[in-house]
Amino acid sequence: MNQKILITGASGRIGTLIARELGEQYNFVLTDIREPADTYGFPFTRADLADFGAIRPLCDNIHTVIHLGADPRMHAPWESLLPSNIIGLYNILQAAHEAGCQRVIYASSINAVSGYPPDMQVRLDIPVRPANLYGASKAWGEAAARFYADQLGLSCFCLRFGWVVPRNSEQIRPDHAMLDIVLTYEDLLRLIIACLSAPPSIHFGIFHVLSNNRHNRLDISETRRILGYEPQDDAFAIAEKLPLT
Image 1 (cartoon, rainbow, N blue to C red):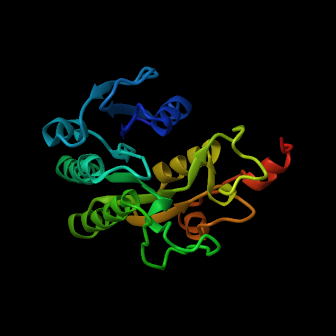
Image 2: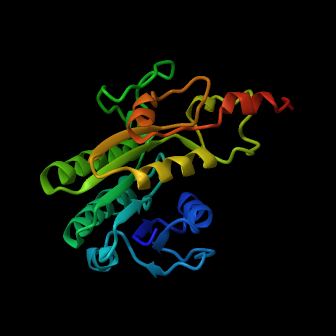
Image 3: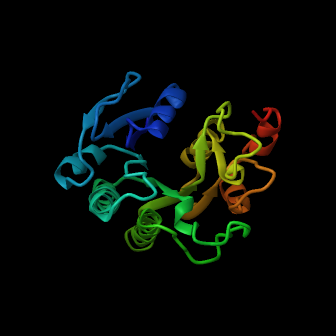
C-alpha cells in the first residue's frame, strides 16, 4: 500500500505493535513526544500533540491517521488530559481536515462506557457513561470526531478498545476479573487491517473492539457487520489452558 499512514503515539505499546507487525503491508509515518525504541525503517518526527504548529505539517500527503497518542492512564489528572487527550485530538482532527486526509482512526476506549454495571453488556445504541475523567475525555473525542465527519467531511472511526494484551500473557488467567474485556494483540491487528481496508462509503463509526471472548462486556456485533472484523481469540479458552497457582 503506497498511501501514507501517520501513526501518532507511535512509541507506545500499540503504535509499536502496529509498525512492527504491519510494516510490510503499509507505508507508515511515525510521530510521538518521545523517541521510539525502533522505527522499523519508517520516518519519525518528534512532536507534541498539543502543539498545532508541529502537528499540522505531519498530516500533509497523509491518507489516513491512526491516532493513538494520549495519556492512557485511567486516573490521569485533568492537567494531563487537557493537553494530551483534548487539545491533542482537536489538533489531529483539524490538521487532518486542513491537509485533506481521508480518514482518522481514533483510539477511544471502553472507559467511555465503563460506568455501566459490570454484568451488563454495553450496546452501541446507549449513551456514553464514563466512570473516570479519562473515559470522559474519550467520549468527548468521539463527539469531536462526529462533528468533523458530519460537518467537515472527514471520515472518522472511533475504536473503543478493551484491555489490550498479548495472547500469551500470563495475566490471562482463570481467576482474572477482566477476561470479558480482553482484546489480544492479534485481534487488534485484525481490526486495524479492517479499518484501513474499509471503503469510503463507511464514513463514520463508533466501534466496540474486543476479542471473540465467550462473554464480552461490549457488544461487538456491529463491528463485525460493518467492518468485517473477525476476531479469533477467546480469553476464557486461553485462560482455561493455564493452571491456577
